[in-house]
Image (cartoon, one colour):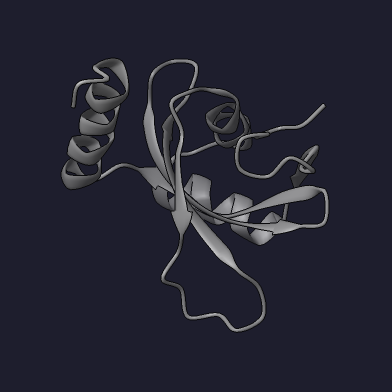
Length: 110
């Protein structure tokens, strides 16, 4: 089973770094479970992250949890595993972009 087949067909699970997991909870009150739910719900917007790293490609995504909490997540793909780097609530601007994408997808005339 693929976790996010439309973007990364070979991703089957998560890799967690305790430091990032703790940071996401302490700074933003985002749990591992919420971050994982985020990748299972649609719509999910994914783009390359304009990050500072030369080591691996990072991605930026907007989506929501099962309880409709809107999150912004930076992540990397390592083989078949997805590694969450940062998870936080969406900003107002990100919510607007996410909402507009839902409207565009729902109305094919747009």
